[in-house]
Image (cartoon, rainbow, N blue to C red; front, side):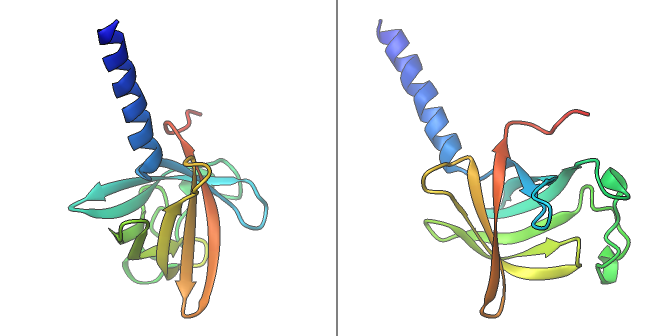
Length: 148
């Protein structure tokens, strides 16, 4: 009986830790169409949060072969698949902030803040800023990269 309770406790604890973490895979949604756009993997490196595109849904003219034609500098015309779009986010105790997010569709980089939805930890609020103006997207947690 006690082994079962200990096992159940660790399963529950693992679920709580996972649900309060924003690392993992997240579906991004196209603002204009409401359709799934890509999957971004969020991961920690040296205490900072980063995110890269690991999957692009098959839609539009190029789908998974899309290039960042609106980006400038080194990123111009580079594949969006594998691109680091979220950089240098720092944890402030309740949210990730202080880093940047790149929108490969327009090539612009925004200041960024990220936090888990208080009522549903499978939803992530991602807010990009330019000065006083901002836009917030909701990303959806998934367990793994989709298989075609």
